[in-house]
Amino acid sequence: MLKIAAPVWMVIGTTLAGVAVMTVLSVPSFAAHDRQLIPIVAIAGYLGAIPIALAVAVRMRDAFAR
Image (cartoon, rainbow, N blue to C red):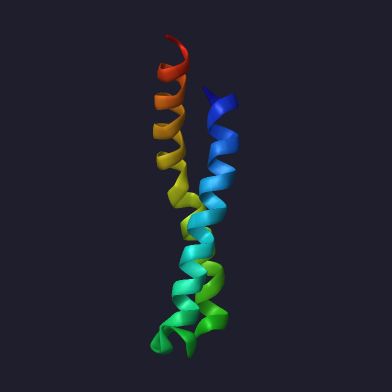
């Protein structure tokens, strides 16, 4: 399952990290502290994608195992 989850994690992690960074840049109160917040939210988005990628990998494995 890791062979499926790793590429899925890369795609979902990059997407979530990008959404989090764009949120920091879009909200004026967050943008004032962007140098501290961007690395934090990017890492959080990338790590937060792990359970999502595992869930997607399980569903993909089950869908293609039929």
